Image (cartoon, rainbow, N blue to C red; front, side, top):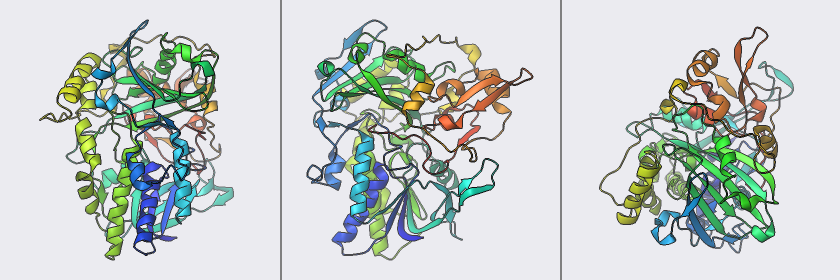
Length: 542
């Protein structure tokens, strides 16, 4: 199948790019064919975010989004920022909060529902949206330029042989291909390596966001209330914090973000999140409530100094595939949408000149001249400062954001990849996490159940080991088997075989596609690839 533009990933960036291309084509009375490939069973099914959304980019994409019924129903009504100790909470007065923590004019949303709405708008404009079709291979022409992607064969058994349900994949060829897979996209990784897009850039850093959706007592619900915390239960040298957002319909989104540059291999982000909910300043919201959904996703958090080169012959990286998240604001939806729009405008201009398969230099130029670049420049030192520990980080972020307004004459750089910061277990003490009570705190498997995760069992492994001996010989021996703890879905567990020897069991059926293993594995031995289309979580309004 041939298109003018193929977009890999049907999240905010990919759909915004598709919509903008069609808007420009209509305005210029031209025909631009656009296809969006999405690996989830439906748009939004793999989309997870907090989320509080800044509508700035959406205002540009659809000035009439309210009339069109965009699901932004709950404006932020109050901001609270708390520093937690194990038994107490200190609220920071709002006049002392940097602007990045003020959400007046923003909306508490379900990003999954916003993505579903964006997909509807795209289809109404004539975009071909294909859910359930993961792109598995990048196609190149004889000169090495990207000329499209191929989808994976369907109905292949675990042994690699076709089953009775076999359907061959298809090649989708394009004049330009935009990659919008989200954080740590498996094709994006290949492009960054092949074209050396990260040359001269600071190492990319990531965080893991874990989220639950609750239905709470109406008497405790405050639509638009936004609470963020720092401190307990994490140690002061570990980057992280929580969010608690009151949506409509007596629902609350609660979650925890842990920077993946942590050193202690005994740390479990999932268990830290469960423990956080027991804090006396937090637990009261959930008394009499019911947990209704669960999910997790990695976050690309390195900021401006870690952004790779955005372009290469035949295509570009957009959204969290590149890393446009504003970590200081804990927001990436509006930045993803804007990046998709900027790339679309560059593609439209190139197509109008009769070009194809070349480098879209207009895209990074437009980015550098945009409000998006300015916003990320102001926020650039937030994550490097916070990575130095809570006390130093909070002090220096206050100076950087309140006094210097993000215009400091210096730019801090990340110096290490997240996986390289994990230290041997001998340097740390195990962490004793409390057992779940199944009312407020829960185990992994009951949580994965609420994510709606499912994969066909008879298919090739999508979690691949470069060397099957490394998990036991290195990870278990040196790091006490960290994959059993950093994974928020109990995919990895060390068990004994019949001879009493340790082995790593991979429960790929549980995988929620968060990509943490691909990022945090200390030997970079685990490689995440897209499974058969439609597999993975089925998030509702997450």
